[in-house]
Length: 165
Image 1 (cartoon, rainbow, N blue to C red):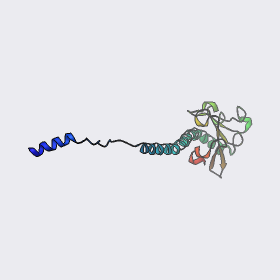
Image 2: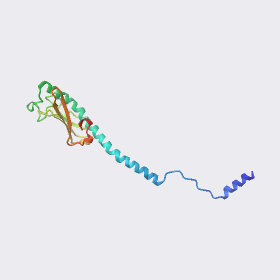
Image 3: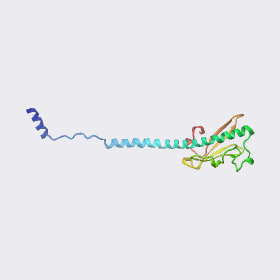
Image 4: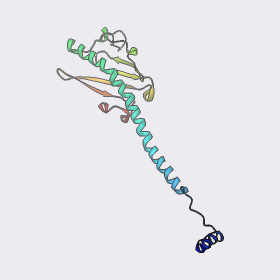
């Protein structure tokens, strides 16, 4: 009991030592902020390219109906629609049995227009990342099959779908 009492008095007379505080130092917090900044600098451009590709993919989906109609027309007539048979200058959607170019639209695509004589299909964007830009789909007759090439002079390659690069 005496030993216990001595320990208690000794605890009371000795100055109390500070207990270690839990938490982060300033340098640790600065390192975390720097790492987050580096990750954001890498992630934001990648996300923008992904968004651009996703919006451009809508053009391919809307083009698919026009592609089918043009393919059928070419197989039946062995030529692309003549300019004289098209309703408007360089707009042959009606000849192909399609809606007007402005009526084939999506969330980001404003129009899909089939051109006369060449069979080239032009997709125009009116919203999103590519607002005002165009994509063109050019047909090539391979004796019985039609191969389509996709291109754009105004859209960066990193924002085009993989089938158009």
